[in-house]
Structure formats: C-alpha cells, structure tokens
Length: 408
Image 1: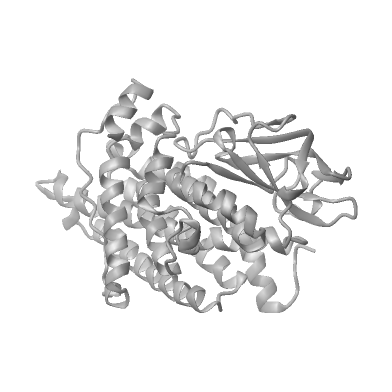
Image 2 (image 1 turned 180 degrees about the vertical axis):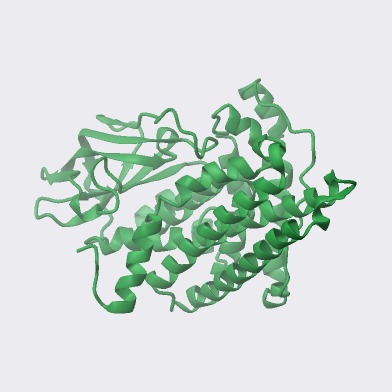
C-alpha cells in the first residue's frame, strides 16, 4: 500500500486528518457531453487522487518531497500516454479522456500532473511520433507502466522562450554521436531513466536524441530552493562529451517544429489541469462559506461572498466549455497551436484568480495547509510560466490574429 511505502520512505510524511470531500461543479450539465467511458475514467482518477494524493500532498509539499513510488501507481492507473496505441502498453483513448485525467490529477496537485504530463506528452509522444519501431517497442511499454520515468530537455539556461537559440549540440563521430551542452528547469530529470533531448547537429538542425541514465558524462543535478511545485522534482541535464548510440536518434524529428508539437500536447493537458485547480478552490470556498459563521450567520449569506462565488462559477463554466470543445477538435485532428494557447492561458488565469478569491473567503485559514489554495497558488506561478509563458501565449494569439509575429 502507498501509505506503508510513504511511512518507510520518509517518516516526516504525515497523513492529513480531514478527508477530501471534493464535488465538481457542472452548472451547464457538461457531463451530458461526455460518454459513459469518459465519466468512468474520470471517476477512477478522482478516486485515486482522493485516496493516494490528497491525504499526503500537503506534507509532500511541506517537506519538498517527490513521492517516487507514485510513478508506478500512475502507470497502473493508465495515465501515462493514454492516447497512444495499446500495442505499446498504452490506453488508446481519446483526448477528452486524457484531458479529464489531467483535470483530476492537477485538482490534487500541479506537481503530480507535471509528472504525468511530462511522461506522456513530452517523452512518450515524441518517441511515438518521431521514433523508430525499435525505439517505440524498447521504451514506450516501460514508460507506460511506470517502470521508467522520463524527462524532456528543451529549455536551456539562456534560452527559454527562444528555444531556437539553443547551444546544446552533437557531432557525428562515425559509429556514434557526441553530445555537449546543458538543459535547465527539467521536470523529473534527477530521477529520470530516459531523457528526450533536443540539440543541434553540425548543420545547425534541431534533432531529438534519447539519452539514457548511466551514459558516461550525463548528469542531472537537482534544483533546490523551489517555492513552487514542491512535490515535483526538477533539475538540470548536463552533457559532457556524452557518447550517444546512433540508434538513439529520433529518425523522424527534424527542426524546431518537432519539439513544439510535443509542447502542444503538453499545453493541451495543462489547460484541463489548471481547470481542475480552479474547481478545487471553488469547491473549498463554497463549503467554507456555508460553515464559517460571522455576525451570527454563515459568511455565504453575505452579498460580497456570493459575488465572488458567482464569478468563480461563471469563469469555471466557460473554461469547461472551452476545454471540451478543444478536446473534440483534438480528436478530429483539427486543433491548432493558437487554439491550444488560448485554452492554456485562459485556464491558468482563471485558476489563479479563483485561487486568490477562494483564499480571501477563507480568511486567515486560507494560508494554512488545512486548505489547498496557497499550495495551488504557488504551483500555478510555475504553470503560468512553463510550456510557454503567459505573455508568449498572448503573442502566439496576436500573430494568429494579425499575421504579424511580434517575437521575431
């Protein structure tokens, strides 16, 4: 059981005493748009979060502890690469199913969703889309089951929003490649078994390489001192003359569009995930407003509290419809990068605003670990930055609207 493992692995981890009573808002009956399979998948992941994440997450974050044992649990649950084919040990599900999974996991914690979406969208997806059949058979089943943990190396110390400027490079040495450079702010990296790394070849073309733990010259130091995503482990990737077998080159990846297509998949999951955060904060605020008594009556009876709750529900409902529609477009293969950018940016902005308003409704109790708002708010400060900053997504939309890219 996970509880026994936690006690053994880290005796500081304490189980939270109050239960997870989350109930999802559905003001526009959006469940009517979901299939029975969608609802069953959502219920399974929601139950998992309530039993395996919610009781421990505040302690994990307080202790800056990444619960590595959750990786296998996620594999058993089927949340790694769920849209990829079953022949590789994956789920073969649609994109709305994937979105609902990310919504429920991030409702539990953004760091937990980061672990899942990096594995599925940024490691398994590029191997599936750009890899050889041998690479797919070698890596995908182990990543899907959680036997392997993966990470994605694109961002560099000096190149974040401008990944095309990367300096990480590799040279052809005849029977192998030699990789040099460094990547920064890489989720999962200190414990990852494999890394999908983007680097320039001698002609300056961006290519994808699979780097495996244990290769000489490859290290992944942990980044310390984070105040955000504290239950997720983050690090660097450092390559010092790393010898890469030629069979580890992703044969179909060529140019910046390859890693950017992976980011589209990840951003899609984030749009649903951040919505889960907003739903969690709203649910906590509604419940607290009915329980907290001031001036002889529940604070939920006051107009200003009702205004906050009404505005939260309105924004959540709009975001639910955006995510559902985007999911249908993803299923049809019609979703564009700019449409995904709109949803990612919208969901995170709504989630941050809802978390802040919910914190105020909770008063002083809102800053404690008894309630989720402060943890969610700190996490969202990372989510609003990674996979394209909030402002970069504005510029992606601006370029779509005007036909003029402002960042070139």
